[in-house]
Image 1 (cartoon, chains in turn red, orange):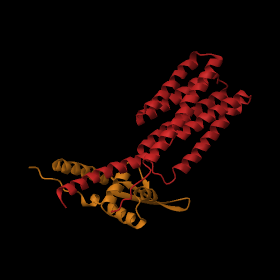
Image 2 (image 1 turned 60 degrees about the vertical axis):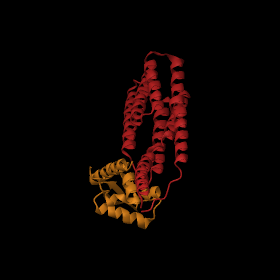
Image 3 (image 1 turned 90 degrees about the horizontal axis):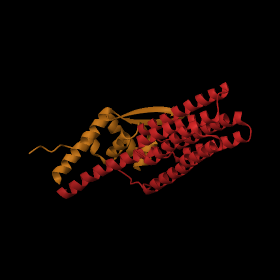
Image 4 (image 1 turned 30 degrees about the horizontal axis):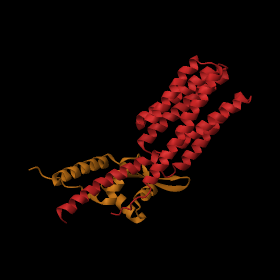
Length: 202
Length: 98
């Protein structure tokens, strides 16, 4: 083997390492659908509550969304390895979800829930989860969603009536539906780009 | 003139190198996932994983999930160190060649 062939062989080895590490990390990049699903769930809960069944609307819709997320995640991640980054991001969202569930269930049962508290609570917690995820992923678009949620947190404390409802619906639309759809398109593009994989034999 | 490093022969095999690189990026991986990512045959993959296991670079856990057998592989600390040293050696060799 001459020196040039040997050098090329070594470069191929380095390139193989990079490709395989990227391939391993790629497995956690399919979460856009959860944003869309939860965005739709929030709209269903709001609509249901507005139709006069407010005591059941939020808990039933949120539990149904939780179950749907759990089922789809378990189906999608079957035979897929977990990564430290995926584990970290999943932990943030799970912790925020549990906090929201306990807070709003307790506020609802105690009769201390009102529109301002609910919107401020939901938006601040979604701001925390989006910001933490965006910092781990170094993803500016998701950080922009966190800023929208935090702005809504402040507005929820000062705003009134219909303006508050419109702001909440708009935040759900942009930070859940639009951002989720954008993420899904991005993930799909990436999958297509790296679709073909070379067979490796020892 | 400094002596050029030797490449670790256990890692140097293409499939074994691909397997360690895949495992370093995940917490643990199933046999079937590794097979899909490398496009290798069951026999070849099993043989190369066994070599990595014997060298102490990967650990294996066998369990049953919904009555189906599942084999999980994890990279060990020795495996991480060996891969890191291999990359350093490669870079040093390429630096010398250029």
